Image (tube, rainbow, N blue to C red; front, side, top):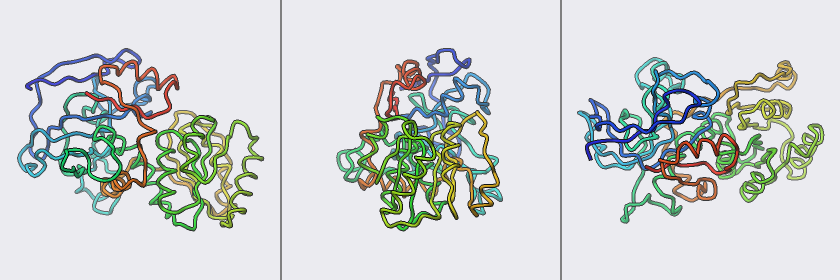
Length: 357
């Protein structure tokens, strides 16, 4: 093959356009990846529908949840030839001051496919090799392990799974803790499974009964925030924690809805010594009393992406069968991208769509 196909955003809110172009050649330290799958994230929809600023000029190929096979390598990247990989959604430079101190997700030179560079809604993509996460393959050429997941489905490891993984790791969650996820979409749903794999008491809060039903087998309890006034919701959570013999302090709360209402709910669940991780993103503002952090001796922090160093451990959770992808992802041909964007934007699909070239 000498040409590639990509679906580009030429103008926001206008249908993505199919573009054919010559295959690019990877430069030093880069690889050319044949894309196996690319997940559709709400960040893509934010760029496309909501005017969230992007760093590259249009036209731009969106998509940052990418898996595939290395088809060609540039000088210095030869060791990656023919490897199956997941591409980190955020790729730090690895050499600046913040990277050397372990804060690669705030690296000023980081590269995000579908934002800083061309993204994965394409047949091929050129990416830096240094931060790739290799996927071990079995004798049959499929990802190794007991999960039975496809390489295309593993694309959602980049962002949908690693983002909550980083937030959970940075919260210091242990098997003695209570983890509360507010918003059970792709990120929140995988967060529930990760926290459960770590042994915590895990509670899921959402306004969608179908999402709660889907995640119920993986959580210790679910709560419908639409059916319960907030005071009743808070009491129900507290009573459940007490009934389970867990501490009523120091809850680990993860806001994963990316909505103003979800953020308000998550902040309202603060208790003494609690930590709040803001993982979801919204352009809307939230009216909260910030002094609650002082009164509860609580902490709040944001979470941007996930450093590549965490990817192998997060991937192992999937390949080892501790985190299940199958019920929560659905593959579509790449040429249905405009239809899939509309489906996700209109909340007509609850699984994480993965587009397959």
